[in-house]
Length: 361
Image: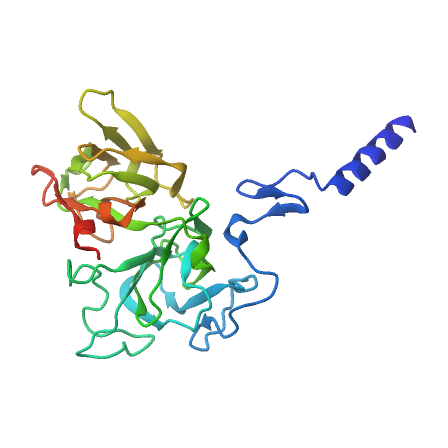
């Protein structure tokens, strides 16, 4: 009886003080636990007509309330047959928004989404808006007008992730969206199962007032664009790329199912190498890492990233889709003036870095 009384007193104390343990990723606050993606959510809805779904009815995804400040986009579902793979473009108009600084994004997906690189760019003046939800030819290439137009990457997901995946920037960081433009995504879906699969995908983007933005973040990408892995062998594909300073806010490695591990090392003249990212073998969990505080880069630092592969197939594997592989590093950094795009044309050639931030106004 005494034990019951003590337990009851403890439960009452916890209830009164709101000190319940928070789940992984949640933030403790005075009245309980807070989803960090909703930390700037107003108590009253600011954005009313902020869901762009083209009238789609989702059968499997169960979505929460759309952002009260922000917007939701839905990819029209497709059904894949066993082993089927599709690569296509989807586009959306921006809904009317009260705030235009995105500090968090969340993906909701069933099984079958390999990747969907969501970005925003100005409407093409010669062709006009995309024929939503379809696209003009070539619209899904975010690099086609560099450096004249540098697209804003809204979200890049982990390989074949299932369920939900979130990208939440540290307090005061975010990126601004130009709602006179449009949203585009190069969607790659793949059915790895022996049965037909309906793939459903949606995104939420959470916004905050401009006055809460301390510093803007921008995306960066590095990749090895050609490599070869002989059948039945293990190989490490890697390269080392220059950066131009700034601070790393997030990192994610993109590989396919033959990957057994990934790593990113920060290199600095006269200092020991620092391992800043390490990923395990292929799975369907999130590979996004957010750094709070961000990692400082010096102007003459280099990033060395590597992908370990085990080719269990009876043929050579190269860079590409399907059963082929990729070794891509993606992330966000600050400030925008230090934005970098880097790639090695081939595993045997040096990495070339382009200072995109120098073209930003």
